[in-house]
View 1 (cartoon, rainbow, N blue to C red):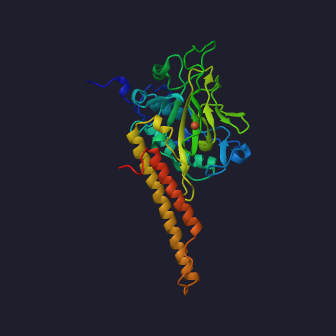
View 2 (view 1 turned 90 degrees about the vertical axis):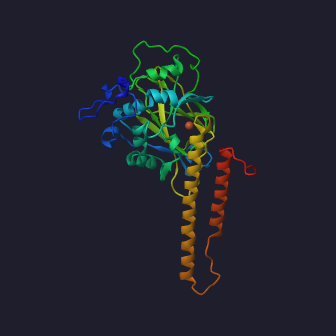
View 3 (view 1 turned 180 degrees about the vertical axis):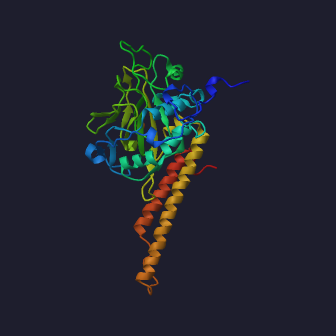
Amino acid sequence: MAPSAIDIPTPISDGYDPRKDTFRGPSKVAFNPAIHLNYTPPNRKYTYSELGLPLKGTSDFGTTEPFQLCSEAAVVELRRELLQPSTIKRRMHSWYRAPATLRGFTEKEAPFIHAFWRSPEVHKIMEEAVGIELEFALPYEIGHTNIQLGASGKEGVQEFPLLPEPVPAGWEEEKSVYHEVNVDDWHTDSFPYVCVLMLSNTDKMVGGETALRMPDGSLRKLRGPTMGSCIVMQGRHMPHAALRAWNTGERITMTCSYRPKSPALRDDTEITNSLELSYLNELTGQFALERFKVLKKKSEYMIAQLEKAKKDALEREPDNLDAVIMDRKAVKAMMKEMIWYLEVSMKQMKMHIDED
Ligand SMILES: [Fe+2]
């Protein structure tokens, strides 16, 4: 049987106009920073110190002001993959905190989403925002997307257009069970750093911000003024929520999560929240792999430190058979951190040390 029209990707030619391509599926468009990025650095950033939040994280970075990250052409390709039938069918999860998320896309299902976030250009922007080198917290979290639901519920998600438009004049939202429900209720993230990218039209949107709760109970609300804008934050230790948007047919935000790249910095990653929203064998398998990668890197870092200390001692005191060849404090700190890291790993995966 011939495949249906929707399964046939539009060939990409020089005159390709993503706005006219109604295909929903893995994008055939190669990521091109000249076309897909529209970057303007954030006007300012706020540290945890400035916000009056306790310093529990791996840097003092708190959050950026909203800034423009990508173009309309990128938004359309991201949505083409998000809103494809198989993704809506197989990748939609919901839980008490959020009525609808789309997440866990493989590169085969969503090549553009992966190419976008994995591009050196976007990665560099994220590192500039945070101020330290980063790596992905977990492949499963690349492109995690929160979707606001309306009266048509989950069924309505497949009706969202690839190019979002403002609602027409006089449009009124039909009341539903989701009417007063936050898109993602109050929480701290499982991942150290996150970018939240707005994929809906914001021309007439009211609300829809990411709200941060300050120590005095006040709220700081951040939302990009345009489609394709984002905020970057260290959400691991900062209570926040994705607020419902009004006067808009939809509110879709895509996120990508990061951990510090440096082996000298702690990895705060957990999967507490992800366990509620994932295919568990895939998630825990990825999590275990990433934990060992981090431990390997930390081991290699400490091996290099100890080898250098030994070399330095030999050069400094060639005749002293009992020269100091390690920084006991640093070794102890790293060993403690590695024990903690393995304990967190086992706890997260519901493994008990005394059980087979
Ligand atoms: Fe969050």
